[in-house]
Length: 132
Image 1: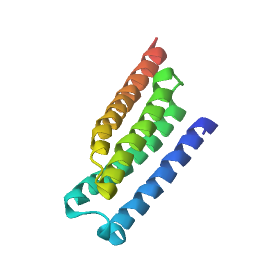
Image 2: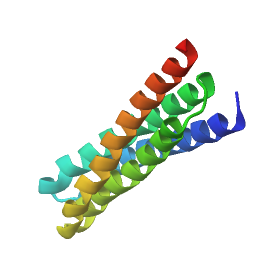
Image 3: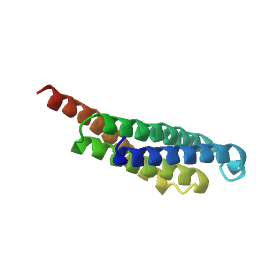
């Protein structure tokens, strides 16, 4: 496996570990901090965090298997930024009830969508190059 893919797998694995830690913290220790109205928001952040940590690992495996192109590399960065912005804003919103953070989450969501689309386009592009 190439070094770039290994690095992304490490990033995805560490992110996944953090999502488990934050999920456990939310269930056991942060109940006093997170109001009931924001418990669903926190739970959404944990779910998206774990899912997109796995997406980083998937993207790294794809990156190792197909010829590198701009879109595959961009997909991983977009997913990472989207994960940080989307989940980060939801974590902070649920712990602080600072509502302006809710307005930041859609920006992270856009990054996540672009990351998934970039991953798909990157794979399509590499297959088209292989076929020609």
